[in-house]
Length: 54
Image 1 (cartoon, rainbow, N blue to C red):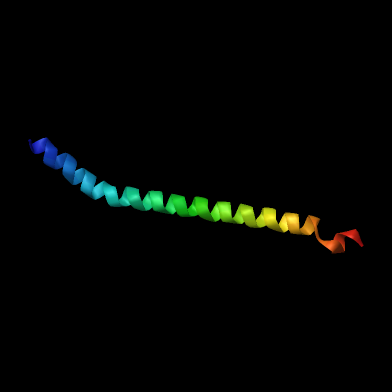
Image 2 (cartoon, helix red, strand yellow; image 1 turned 180 degrees about the horizontal axis):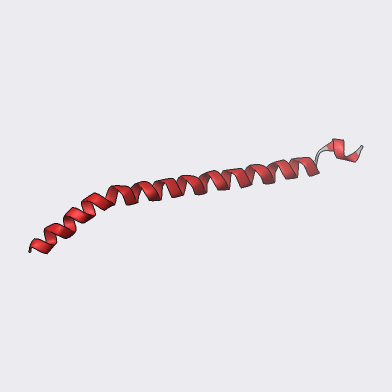
């Protein structure tokens, strides 16, 4: 039964760091996706811009 407390202690210590890592990773993915969408939108806006046809 003592091993159970050791595993529980390890999970309690590691858990918050793992959750923080996953949160940072998700935020990075969200920022990358946002940047790609913005670049794609700017590219499409430049293609349809009337100033290109002059």
